[in-house]
Length: 174
Image 1 (tube, helix red, strand yellow):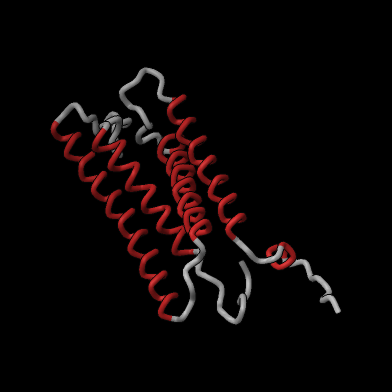
Image 2: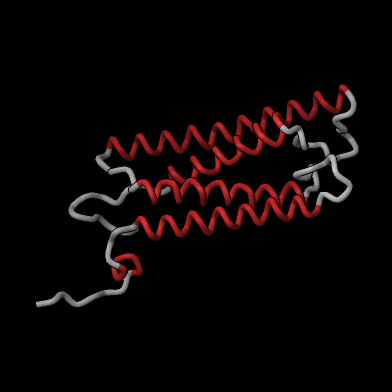
């Protein structure tokens, strides 16, 4: 979306993306770390096994710092949204907002999956299975599906003419 529509500034997009990153991180931490207990932040490292008290304490601290970081994303997203509303900017249409949330969540999965699961190897989606790679690849695939689905929603919820969306100039009829 670029430029004002009907005299109004365009709706903010960054808040929805940041909220998606934070909420996606919360889903990961709450569901995978706490409820299912498939992994913690450092469980793939030999230094912090979750089978020892010291390892579990280190993993719990790392999980807490991870949750704090996701909370910061949610806080900043809300702060930016409220600031935009106070400036008279409208919220994006629901389809666009949900799409932005999905893009943020999927982006979280892709970045976190690539860095933590593949580059740093500090944990996997499932540290409790003999072959974690399929789970890690599935996590990345889910991230890609979320990004593509979100992008589709954003595009379908943007009601401006296609020429305005793409930046192609169209001669006025007349």
